[in-house]
Amino acid sequence: CAARKPFISGNWKLNPQTKEEAVQLASEIAASINPSSPDADVALFVPYVFIEAAMEAVGGKLQVGAEGVVPEMKGAFTGAVSASMLKSVGVQWTLAGHSERRVIFGETDEYINGQVLKLMEMGMSCMLCIGESESEFEQNLAGAVCAVQLKKGLAGVPKESMDRICIAYEPVWAIGTGKVATPEIAQAVHAECRRILAAMYDQETADSVRILYGGSVTPESVDVLMAQPDIDGALVGGASLDSSKFGRIINYES
Ligand code: PEP
Image (cartoon, rainbow, N blue to C red; front, side):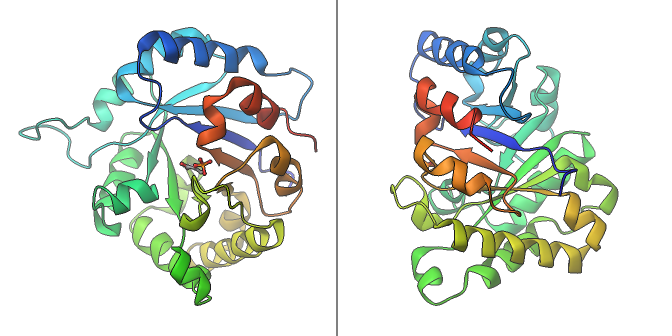
């Protein structure tokens, strides 16, 4: 669909260990954006402590977002970061539902839904990550798992807010493993996610939501993934830590 602007994003996780490292990587990535490459939105999801420094380093050439948020707004939640705190430093985009948050930190669909709703209430944007585990994939359950995660994650999100939601389909077996989903598999699940969104909302809404693929995307795999009709972008972990690799992914060949 021509109306869906491609969206290439990076997720640094717990990787750059110093502010200097984060600033250098962010500046190199910003400098790598080729003005004549496909017109895509670009975002980096970075650890909280580096958000402001990374924003300054990229000088508005791309979005700097947060890797997470808590559903609560204020109060006795030691260590938590709220949507209003993020908004106050200029964050628009926040990840929710990443498999590492689900598995390592025990975040449930209900908790993730709280994060999504809070971001919507604050006028912010959310990249909701969904995807099946390896055993679910082997049992042919990718579509069913995505349906549950979409329905629970987006519960209560009105159609009018769906332009501030992106979906990242990230099969858990492909994250950080080097096992990228084949373009055919990824396309099939993306198309299924769009059918689920059409049933939840309507066809027009489903056709306008950007669905990104994530899971071991590299410079070698990005072009063919981006050529699939229902793949609107990429969420990139490992390769977003290398500015030449991520630069090549941002400037994918269409
Ligand atoms: C991710 O963490 O969202 C991810 C897709 O990681 P990687 O690209 O390293 O598989």
